[in-house]
Length: 113
Length: 112
Image 1 (tube, rainbow over the protein chains, first blue to last red):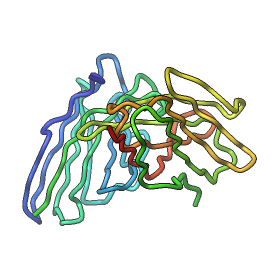
Image 2: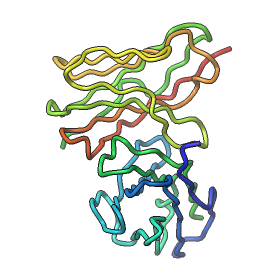
Image 3: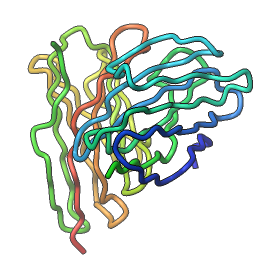
Image 4: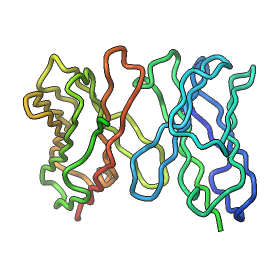
């Protein structure tokens, strides 16, 4: 167990809908990272928050947004969902800025039908 | 753009044998490399890392080799066990270790 908690584990929704994925980082970690992993693809970095502020942005679509709350948990919002958004979404956390020191959650599997 | 990739998408190995998973990287400025293991239904898990000033590093049953001349990274797993079945990713980072670039992954299957 990495200490990073993601909910829900599975989510099935229809095209056009909006969903929210939740991540609780390890105790003491200030950075939260979000990734998308499509079938048989590598991890694609979406966005990073550090202590409530956006720190780095990757290949995140405009339909997607995230935030980190004062208690350091984070949410990833996916809207106007398309079939191609079906993927595993991972959250990771680290104490500082270094993504190389991040620990990953078990992911949320999103299926858009 | 620069990227990290894997030579073989799938690999099947007999239990007890050694396995080698390969990775090519294209950014010659990469300073730090990590191998991750991702089991079915789980997130990536750190296995072993290596810095660019080293060419070999050993862990428990795992060894990472770095060949900077040809920009090649490999993960050797000795005496494979069924629990080694997973997808293995390499990842690279530049100086400062802030950002990672992940490879596509190799699926390793251990045959009992």
